[in-house]
Image (cartoon, rainbow, N blue to C red; front, side, top):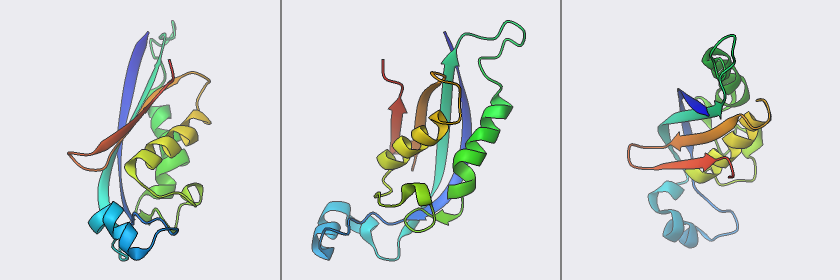
Length: 136
């Protein structure tokens, strides 16, 4: 099996806030990230697909086509957007890095051939990221 990865970037704002918590509890749990004005990140998204290369092309999957799918299924919705307010497929979720990785996985898995998606990494900062991998 061979894996290949496509890296894309996007910029988004968000607020970590659970509406069922009091303001004090949100501050305790999410700290400065619960600021009502929100804050933003320059995210890095890494999408890995894995499988056997096609005999005719030697591609596991055309990375140009993968980029198009990533843009259409994810980036067109999240880039320069408020994740809490402007992304319907994140509605009702707290847009943590973990929640983003899970939601991006679901979006991409629905647009790729079955079993091809191997890993989604959402890097929020140089120090913080979340990974969703295919179940073994």
